[in-house]
Length: 196
Ligand SMILES: [Ca+2]
Ligand SMILES: [Ca+2]
Image (cartoon, rainbow, N blue to C red; front, side, top):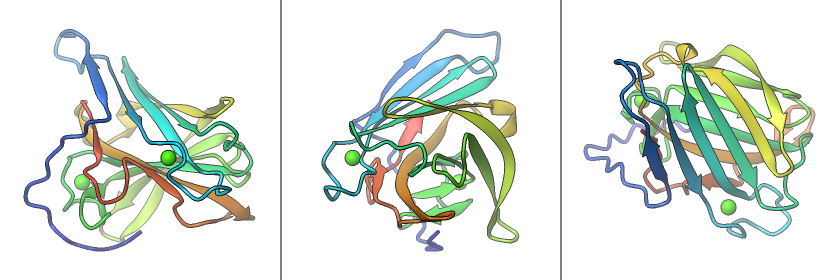
């Protein structure tokens, strides 16, 4: 992870590629909602086999379900690795500041590849050590073109029903070793998407 500390004073949380639908009031609890993001197919090198195309995040009750898909033919559960970076306080200056300070992630959920197997790994950024600590492991459902995982929102410190996020993809090229980031969604250098 880059350690750039470029503070963005005015982070415009505007992203054209997502659509939000909000449920009604739920007695003070965070309402159920679903947000989708998309990314073009074919925006990475042909043959890289890690072309992100879409994702959906859904909160239903106390659970958050994340579904991510790659371009047709790219997904291989033994090779495809996808991470979601989550900026819980939507503050790029807190957490692990990446992408030239556009996002400061407090959590990463990583899934896919032979190394991770059928479990998604939830990592929390430790600002004292600047390392990522594993805080949970959850079953992954493999789909024809992607993966899905459900985690309890209680796992995520600072969860308010709103957070910034982006996805990144890679391929496993050796035992628990990976290519660098191949694709991102939204693209690097743009404002992250917002779940709200
Ligand atoms: Ca793509
Ligand atoms: Ca943050």
